[in-house]
Amino acid sequence: MHTLLSLNFGAMVYYKTDEEVEFIRKSCLLVCDALAHVASIIRPGITAKEIDDAAETLIRDHGAHPAFKGYRGFPATLCVSINEQVVHGIPTDSIIFKDGDIVSVDCGVQWNGFFGDAAYTFPLGNVNDKVMELCRVTKTSLYKGIEQAVSGRRIGDVSFAIQNYVEKEFQYGIVRELVGHGVGRNLHEDPEVPNYGKRGKGIKLQEGLVIAIEPMVNLGKKEVVTAKDGWTVASKDRQPSAHYEHTVVVRRNKADILSNHVPIEESISRNGEVRAVSLKGAMALEPA
Ligand code: MG
Ligand code: MG
Image (cartoon, rainbow, N blue to C red; front, side, top):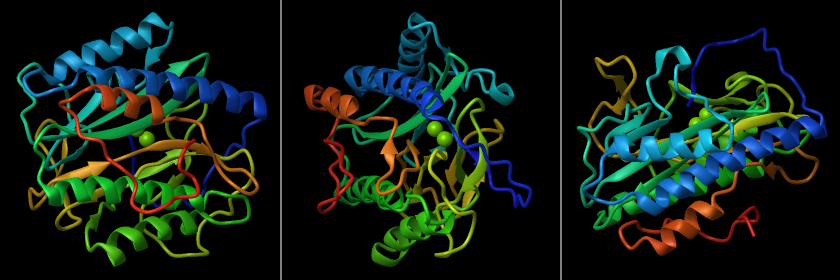
């Protein structure tokens, strides 16, 4: 989930101790276990409510809390956003996945006092080539941002890397209104992490800063609208949108990625109804 972009000049940034980072990592890995479970059961014909129930059960069975449920009144464990929906879709039993859908699933947990946050977009079955490419570029842009999350760089370097890749190299629309965020004892902490911006701007990154980086990329134009439910954000031109998210801690030479997409992708490889989304080109930060 995200914070709405607000121009915040009084940022209150908390740098985490190594011990706190390990708590956040545990929460992030539980999020990824929940997403891996979703990846093993999602397919055309099942409902958004079914994956939400499965994720909630897994999280509660570990003694953790689904972070989104009840957050500002959000009613579910997962944000489930299909096709032209960008983020914050509410999973209900009237939403039945279809062949050719892309389904963005965002999950957060609170465990031992610390939050974790991650997201993944699942292409189901016969997704057209243009939309598969959107997924690959969005996922790759996440790692372009993570490459910049090292001490001495600035938030704007992360933002610029994502925007430059998505808009300059591929002419997709990067969503402005929703941004990444700090993560810790709160789901949303300072600083905001926009997916667009200028190199060298924003706060300087220091070791121990934990941020969720989460590009939301539209196949068409960048503009979005919020539905009457007050939550679901969709592209204004109704073209598909993708979303991938990691929580990372800033370190000296290379960010440490606290969440882990590998178990999600292992589940996908065993689920014949979900397409794998590969990174474009060699990325130094691709998880081992
Ligand atoms: Mg999230
Ligand atoms: Mg988030």
